Length: 362
Image: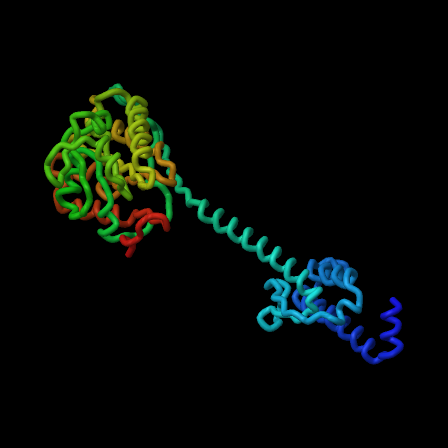
């Protein structure tokens, strides 16, 4: 204090300039803060972390220490810098060092918060929903009951894709899947057979790989090769084999096994096409009521995240849900030229994510 008094007594103008410089420094910082937080109350302003750092520095450093130090340039965080040149403020080094440390902490916290937000956004996945249309069940002489509801294609913001989308796809199914393989023109791996069922798909007898015509063991294939998309259409040949719940249990078990082997794949459960009026026999198991029940059971396995249900029946059936006779040669299978419609339907329902290959986008 004696030294300060001596300085003031001998050099009153220097002391006045020093005090004014200190006030201007603090005032400049306050103005920067106040400019960005103009609606703040004084109590909020003085509680600002930057003000607190400067105030603490002033208390801990006497005038004589500040007189002998050089000024340093400190970069303020964006929310405190306002319109300052590049967010830079000239401060005494004693103050600047503490402000700089505080700024580094603030920036580190901002980066951590930003990283946490990005992680949360990455983890947030759009979830689709599979809806059902209910109707009064129809009484039949068949041993298979009408479930009284029809499953609709899973609601989801699908992406229109081109043929490249299917180059890493596998189709698993029966004779209708063979039709897609033969007449759609899609370049994909087709594993399908006449009479194939969900009960035989992963069995030791294997499935025909349409590309070579040879039987392959699907359990081995799905463990050795990774696919981006897998399409499954089974249920027609299961109509007379066990009830619907038995079918669903086996379908779920197969689906879970495929998910374990193909964790990155998007799986599409395709509805079985209805049959024509000539083939729709309500006295046996071979009828659209039973097909509808199997489709609804498969649709219940779609989670709207990795597994989706696709129903192309509206493109091929009439107002009564019967396969249009002009589209089929046997009441069950489509004429070759109608598979182009099925192909277009599949291309309108692509599921593309940032973590998956996007070369198939249009």
